[in-house]
Image 1 (spheres, rainbow, N blue to C red):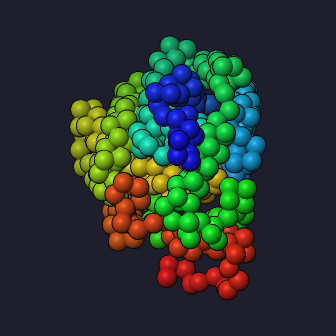
Image 2: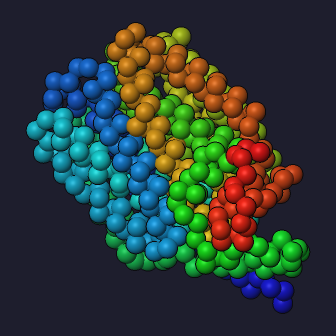
Image 3: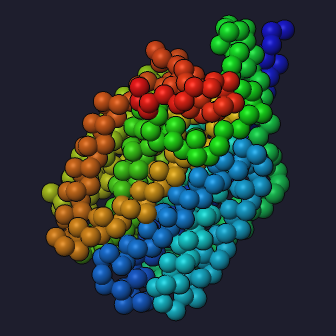
Length: 458
């Protein structure tokens, strides 16, 4: 038997279908938890707390985004050392005070604090679920695995949002939607305790497989490369992902502006559509269609990217989102808005899983969690910055200005991907990841090189 052959047999969807399915179910619950907020919280600002400022209303998204971005950075790196399951379970625990605080909130500050807890919850649970699913499948079908993860999560967002809309119409803005969230959290925590298993051993096994393959095909290449026991520092990993590797720079900015667009849906779609005369239930339907198309489409788009590569779906998806956003202010009525929402979901489906897959393509299994954490830090930083930028524009020039600004930014983001990003899919790329040519960018002195770091993007 060749080196690594036995290791390879533990990876794959077929071999790990039960654990993979459990993680997909958990991801759907993670999505449903935040889906409740997307529909129920913006109207609560005005009706319960008298908040009328657009910028102040969407501030809950920024509070959520700041904490989630930071926790992504920390949790991804920590999971490479402590495992995925423990952090997944901790994430469910942080969702409890989120729901309780909103149920009993006396002013908007309570809501902002609650969303900080929700940010921790989403960072820990969703980051761990996608990392664990990538662990299980190994190097083959990574795009499909990420697509299924994101599909499950955003179907959950749509279901949670639609259910919250029904509960609001029947029982009011509080406490019914957040009691639903508490029930989801309790079930998710129970499934995480048992029968969900730890997947870090799968990542370590993939490291052994990769090391064996490199040693077999190119012993010289394996010489200066550190083993899986050498752990790159978070700062060095962040610089590599954010600057040294031009493809990862393009991916990180794409994720960052992607969350600008999503924050538009969370904070501005309900306000704009209610202002234009839709009912709360109709708003929930528009937001739900966006999430459902996005969610269900990611299974197909993830598998598509395994065949055609990541770059084309990412660039075309970003441009599609920009076009769909522009359709909202230039059309009118439930039907056209549902169509624009669905088109935006198609664009998101092309982009979202394949940005994550691109990171998985480039990262070594030993530091994949940390690399995904850096990417998700930038991506969810868009939640922190986006509402402030778009809210400031809406405050100064009206809600429509936020939509046009978002359409322009997505066009710019697509252009950056076209110019900077190289293909990362292992089956289609023409160049190895940048860190393989410059291991010192990741490992520093551990790479066995004493000369100073080369200039970035060289």
